[in-house]
Structure formats: C-alpha cells, structure tokens
Length: 524
Image 1 (cartoon, rainbow, N blue to C red):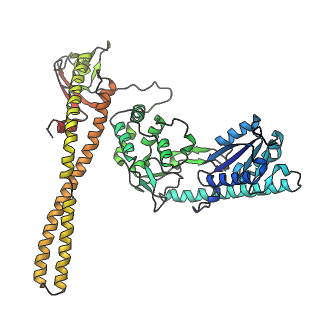
Image 2: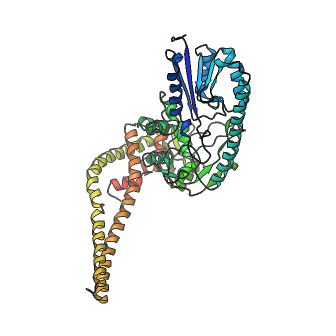
C-alpha cells in the first residue's frame, strides 16, 4: 500500500537533564534530536516501501524516558487511538519508555490491538516480522537493562547533585534567566549582561511599590522579550516547544524572579525532587533546600533582595483580602496618619478628634482638595522632569567626554615605559644610582597624580551609574503616568513619601524621588 492514506509517525526524544548521556558530561551525540531524525529519515530512504507514505513527526525534547506524560508522545497516542497513524518508528526502545514493563504492554498488547506496526531501528526490531519465539524475550531483556540503567543512573545523579548542592555548584540543564553558564566551569553562573538590566528593573519597580501585575504589564508594553522568548531568540533551553505560542511575561514569572535568591549571588538548590524513579517532579520542604552564600556575582544586592521579600503581602486562609493601606497624609502637628472620616470625604486627625485642646483638635480636611493639590504638584514635577530630560540628553555627550579616562591611562602607560627606560640606563651605567632614584621618584609622583585623577573619575562614574539608575526608573514611571489626572493609591504609593498637612491651605510634600527632583532643580 503505497499511498498517502498510510501514515508513518517518527518519534524522537531527548532528556532535559541528559538522562541519556554519560554521567560525567560527555554528551552522546548519537542521541541528539538532530541525529535521531537523520537516522530515522535514512531508514525511510533505504526502504522503498515508505517512499510514498505520509510522514508525521513527534518530538519530546527535554523529557525523561522515565515519564509517560510527555506532550508529544501523548499527542501521537491520541492520533493512534483515532486511527490516524499506521506505523511508529523510533531510534530504539528507550525512546518510547525506560520502564520495561510499560513498554512491554505497548509492544505486546496496545500496538498489536490498534494494528500499529512498530519499528526500533538500532534494536533491529520490526513488529511486522513477528512470530519469532525469542522476540518477546529479547525485547523484555533489553528493556529490563534500560530500566536498570535508568534506576542506577537516577541514584548516582541524586548523590552527585546533593554533593554539588552542598558545594554551591549549579547543576541544572539551563541557567536561570539573567545568567549564563561560565565557559570555564559549567557549574558556575556568570551574569548575562544583555538581560541583567531587566532583572534589576523588576526589583526596582517592586521596591518602588508596583505590584507583580503592574510590572508584568509594563514589561509586555515595553516589548521586552519574556524569558521564554529570549531563550528562543538565543536558541537556549527547551522553549522551542512554544515557538508557535504567544509566550509573553506573566505575573507568576515576575514573582518567581523576585523570590529567587540566586539573583542576590546565593545558590539555592534541591528545591524540587522526583518522588521515586517514575514519580512526578514535586517541590521539597524549605527546610530541605541547600543554600550556599556568595557562589556567584549577584545581579541585585542581598539587601535589596531582603527588602523586596518584605513587600509581598501575606494572606491568611479564611481572612478577608488585604486592603491597600497606602497613606502618605500625616498631621504636621502630632505626626499621626490622617484617616478618612466615615463619610469618606474628610481626612481627620484621630488624635485631635479625642484631644480638642491640641493644635490639630477637630481638624478635618477635604480629601478631594488635598489630593488635587498633591496631584497638581506632581504634574508640575512631571513637566519639569520631561524638560530637564531633554536638556540632559544633550549634555550627556559632554559628560561622557569629561569622564573619559583614556588619555590619562595612556599618559600613565607612557610614564611606566619611561620608568623602564630609566632602569635600563641605570643598568647600562648611563645613570648613577642616585640619579636613577631621583628620576624614578619624580616619575612615580607624576603617575600617582594621574592615578588619583583616574580614581576620582571612576568614583564619579560609579556615582553617576547609581544616579542614572534612579533617573532611568523615574523616567520610565513619568512617561507611563504623565497623563494621569487623579492621585490614585497607585500614584501615591509610587511617588509620594509623605504629605504633612498643617491646615487646609498649607501642606509640605516629600517625594520618593526627592534626590532626583533636587538635582533636576539645581539643588543637589
């Protein structure tokens, strides 16, 4: 039957954790997806009976043969049950499964019942040639060996990974987003400078008061590739399986990043485990995690990481949802927070309410008017910032020229060469020892002056970098909220540190970006 109604399925599989390769990292190229496909197509080309048949491909890249819940394998079996496939071809038995009992059920019961011809190329097995008395025994024995190998490998891998975890070594197949595996040591992480700024931005936005949802929206609106999209672009990891799906940022990934201590330079391992050799990947109790400090360069400081953890709201089962209690409005006289009155229209001082003799006694201010005043001030700062930002861009070129140390470093290098020539003259008796010492000390003094200038410029560069991070963050927020008209809780949380209320006409505002605003207005 040489027609398109006969369908051949080619199935390939490669383990995510390289279960099919050597324990010591020597990758067996014969098991790679590319080489499996080449082998299967070579088999088709060498057998004329397959020339005119329709061919479907199913590939599970990154799934262990110990698991049967593989997406592409499941899709292929659905096609089998629907009668859409007539023949399945694999490299060897272990591509289907490493459990010798399970694969025996497929070969001896399911496939024959469904009328499926099964071929394992390198095992020289073709169910069409059935009837051999030793075939069943041969298949069972080979899969028993495969299953034994899998169990032995699993045990060794568990032991090896536990040891590596205690040593603070990275042992996963793919580096976390924001890091790369070091070319010199694959068990050490190095910063991926291309996306590290994204990680820093996420932490900065969270510390500025934004929720994971808001951060997610900003990342997607900014067109920043998600970790999956970035992996696809760089051809890293297993994210190619989602190449036809929209895989943008989601809140879960943002929260995962914010709670991942590895971004602070500490290695945390063994957070998940397999329950039994064929069990599901499950999280382990936090007490069983292995944590080693300072194993690699952090993208954010440990202090910022701890501060970020404090920003997460804690919800208790059975308790009402936590209310946004952001409140920057304070009584300038007693320092207490102002509260909304029962009618939700007035801000009142609870202390003055029960102490009529106090300066703030019976104080009540229009919530709407106070918020309008603060919003007007905030919008004025927005306008000033946007104008200042344009001027700053024009000044940036000059500032970079002033902070360029190239000429100074060139002068230092020339003076070092001069010292070498002085020493050569001294060795050749062209200079006396005293003359050499005088000239050398003079050159050293000149070098020290230049080195001090370089250090001063580098210090200014570091200060500018820190300042620029704050400016860049404010710039992003200003551009996002420049059209806002009302002081919402969100705006209050992001921009307002404190509003001291003296009376209905006099207030003092402290902004969360006071340092940038002061520099912008020429006061710092």
